[in-house]
Length: 345
Image (cartoon, rainbow, N blue to C red; front, side):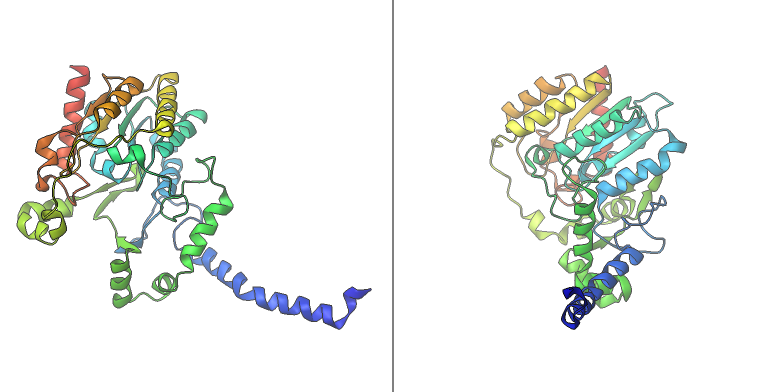
């Protein structure tokens, strides 16, 4: 009886009007798809001609790229790691694999041990062949917390049991609500691009990329450094003046990390995956703790763990890094070669 009263009708009308802006904004998000996570993935993570991109969700790109290209590529060999792994090139690794190997790169910013485990579990549980694995596990990954509340780092909802589709899209939708981000997507200007770059909300698109392997290349940076290294590093005075971290390195593997490492080892052994682990060095940082090194070797195998964290030549040489964290591609290639020489010769 009360539902036909004018007051109730006014309440419904006002509620609909109040929700209209939200509905329109959701529709705008779905149409614009600013982070390429709404529309069906078409095999291209960056639109042609784009020179800047919102810091992408590499976890989403990696999985959707695999699903898109696998039917024709038949991947059976995988590189797992954070952005540090991006310069461990598939072509360099493939020299140590059978000629028939087809390589895909699961490289993701701020990757965690949990992320690697969940990706391995996703692949194997769905029957995809995983014959070879190259795991790039830097010291920081052993203690890196999950960053599921940040848009670029939330895992794909198909892979992580801790994330659902609604959480995933709500986080991306809220990132689009950033006024500068919305303006950049709808009406980009040079001044706005410069502001977003300074704020760390967008990044330059990789200078070269092979979408079919999810692999980025640093060829332009390599050429720049080779041509004038002094000028390149002069733009990073904080790095040039960085003092060496006093040793020894504190323990990084806690009970949680150890449990995830054992999960990874169990998957590798259950599915008879041929694998190699590389622990890369970091600029002016000491070697991995001897206890952590022993734990890694006990779980993943002394013959499979190649710990280069104590490589004083690379750790002490600024010119071995793009930024103090990411190692120059030629050095990454040599670390792969050194690992296979140790393991198989």
